[in-house]
Image (tube, rainbow, N blue to C red; front, side, top):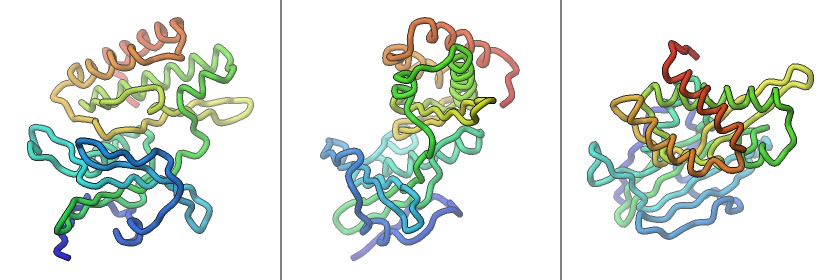
Length: 231
């Protein structure tokens, strides 16, 4: 088999492509046959008990001005994960990421650790929380999204299901935000262009966030975007 390898430099990568490609678990996100190729996510259990998520794609490409003929979507997503991590934004930790071109198809893998203790924003709002904790969550959410946009990164799929929340501590409770679903992210020339699409998308799909919290988020987010905020 004539194979060409494409891989981002990532010192944390462990194991070989064949090892991960041949590792199977239960489908977490069912495999879809799309016009852009095949894509699906499996939940794996490492020998040490760590839960991992393996995104597997075949002939699945992301196209933009830099790659008009497309590059494996997973390699594009990996760039965004690395960039956001460098900004101090919590994203899933990458265990392995690579793509290879065989004689017949492109195969790509992205294996990440689970975000232990995090739940989606949808799930978080289904739980009763104090007004103080909700305000802290809103501020942390504004800080996180604002930091991403100020660096020129557009998420592309800023839905509540891709925003995760973790609350730690019992007496002094603290909120942390993580972002997932970066396959359609893009780096824009300005903070405004990075913000525009994400803001409108989040506004349209913000439920179950109540109106009161949305208004508080908009105020906090605009303060971050217009201030000398430093994370």
